[in-house]
Length: 355
Image (cartoon, rainbow, N blue to C red; front, side, top):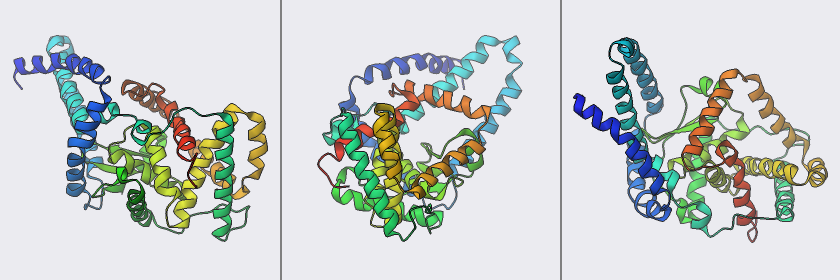
């Protein structure tokens, strides 16, 4: 790369940053021309290119990029003393290219129209509405738990392999798109991550790889959570970048699934968010509702807590701080806490709909 080109690329990094700040004020433009314009074409192409490969190409690309980055730093670190300006220009120029590529192939979705606007939903709700929805979800979860033939006190493990769950997750979106065409998409590319152990130590259930359009799921997470994580990552695949929106869409794709086990997974997933929000808003209501949840469901929640506690380490905290700042930098003001905002979407969506 010529020195003049590197300088230009480095100077373009702040230009891109401020350009995106301006673009935040035009979510409808992003929605029309990117999120529902060029992005679906690009993402479909990625899924068709890499979806048929049985292992994660994106994981291998990330590993190669990390090795090449470390190799370059090792070879050029001495330039920090001999030519520090040129060294920093090279680094910033590279970051500029990465920044541009990320936003072009996926990142602009962070600036799209909020989902509640697209679906005509309100974003505020009362505690009474929250408690009412939570009671309905408790009834739904308990009913499914019994219908599957398990005693109330026994936790349920899905009788499916992870590959079976991937296929059922695809079917969930096919079913959902019949009611909500907004979530119709073609071609799927969802796989177990090759680096699941590393994801576990960082505290993540999965991630979306924008370079290859692959959805990666941590194959170590507990069985009952696997369908929702799969659906969550597929929502990212469709261009719904906000974590709260991906969680909401994952609920829709699982809660009403024709397979009762997948429906059960979606029910207890959404119930956990709602009952936790009740605890924050009305402790007396929480204390009243908690004993009405089947012990087997509570045991599934406990199992997940113990699972993450087993892998807890100092690096997880650092990775969560990084992810929190990343979300805030990408138009999610509440950072990691934005995950819980999905409750607002759930409460308003199910105001006049059956669960």
